[in-house]
Length: 209
Image 1 (cartoon, helix red, strand yellow):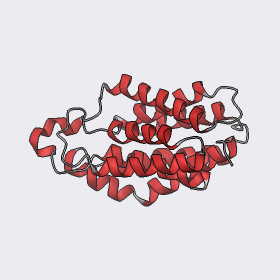
Image 2 (cartoon, rainbow, N blue to C red):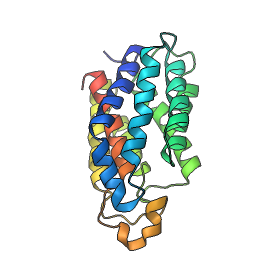
Image 3 (tube, rainbow, N blue to C red):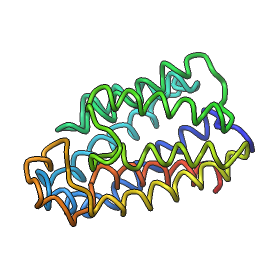
């Protein structure tokens, strides 16, 4: 298997829903330290809604339609800042994948990079600001560096995202609710970076990594 097909993309999203559900309390605990404390609950609600939508929608059988359904559902069900960011991310993936049957490792990195750009346009965050960007950007870089094998590439991305999420702890938050805390944001991992790590771990699992 050297491509992300619609079937594997569906598995990716459903796996993400399961992982978010399993880790919802942890994400909310992280958010309680530097935010509103609802990141896990919001993300869980959104991805559970996506899972229900996908399980009942056989029409989402191409990548563009699949990601569009995911993005629209997240926009309408995830509260706080995460709804527009994650929703917009998947909507951008949908645009990039319109009428495409499958993605190889390079294509996947390009599509994710476009989604990252959408997140940065919406949230105005840069690497080092202690946001989900701090996990997604190095994950995409690791995917590119891993080469053409999609299993190796997605595992490299997942590992990079997890390490990067952990590495947000010593950062000073410069965006979002956490930025209001100033120096008190230091010492806590960013919840958004952690949900990105779960998203990419689910992607690696879907491709067989």
